[in-house]
Amino acid sequence: MYFTDRGIEELIERRGDEQVTLEWLGERLRDFVDLNPDFETPVERLATYLARLDDPDDADA
Image (tube, rainbow, N blue to C red):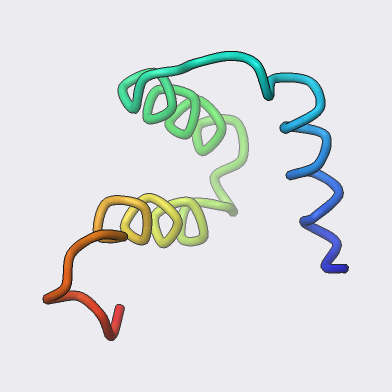
C-alpha cells in the first residue's frame, strides 16, 4: 500500500456517498495549491491526468 492510499481511503470513507462536480473539485484543488504551493506540480499532473483519462490520443500521458 502506498502512503497516499491512506488519504484516498479516508476520502472514500468520509465522502464516498457524496456527489460533486468537476467545477467543485477544481476549486478545491486551487484552494489546496494556494495553501500548499509546493504541491503545484503534482496537482497539475493529477488534473491533467484526469482531464485526459478517456482521450485515446493521450495514451502516453
